[in-house]
Picture 1 (tube, helix red, strand yellow):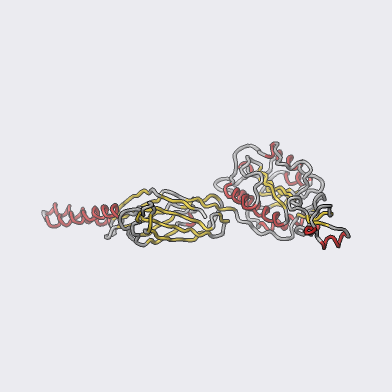
Picture 2 (tube, one colour):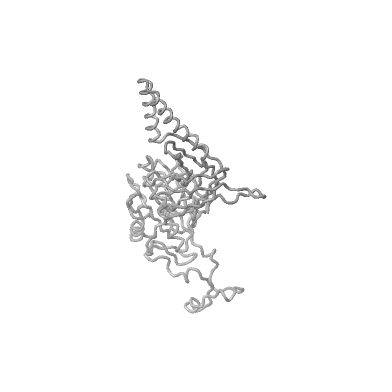
Length: 417
């Protein structure tokens, strides 16, 4: 849960449509009364003109002075999932706050704001320990964020009117809360492209997800190994004692490369649908590979924005705020993120219009036994041909391509070099 208190507030008042009509009638009566010498009409005009002034004074006297605490449950949510926003509003003033309407400002224009109804709130009282008691109401609403990012929720606008409906006053709580909205994780088909026959053996392309776990995570019995780690079924199959390996030793590694340079995306004006597809795919690949026993490391082609070893929820939180960068190449210019060398784990790339330097860098990463798959967003030139020649499996996609369809195509076409 997330919490933020808002102690300060600013207010603004204006005449309602009825108030302006009231003033117009008052002015006409004054003009007509003085113009025709009918003093009684002029006096009525003065009376009508005084009422908005009275209403103005009223709303400023009774305007609420509130302390707002906002909580999210959950405080980290995926795109399309719902979170509940709970507000506790404490009247910190010295008089009763009248019943009012309130609006919670939301950051998505098409989504609109959240409308709330607040009852009359008694003033809170301070105890001997300087703690406020009473004078609090609780309201809540549910939102379903439509896009990833660090969403700024609030401020809360409380709106009151005078009894005649002539003057409208809005009080804005100044503080806001940040809701972390991560990209959604799409389930990918179990028939993936990656499997392994165990530590030290080379991976191979397969339509089966993960192979036999009891073979991956076992080794021969060594003197001193505890008997409770013996895998009896595998021992019977091999004709010798086999023990389960330490999970950290059996951890398989994968690499996910994502294009994060704005110059690579042709639809970068405003928001890039292609980049959003790429971020969505990174999140889904990481979750899917984790289910297969792989720990993923995400490599950005631009300036690094993610933590080096981020995975799982930590990676999702990082992807919530990742943006396109204007800088030159990051990893592709020399820092390979540990991709070169003896690693034989799968390498998956999500690319858009890869330039010659990026293609050459990717070609150098291919090693015997690698599964290398590139998801190519709309691109031109012969990048696909060069990558295929180097040993990459290339899958053409677009922002409209379903992620599981792209994954299925990759599994169908993937080869081991």
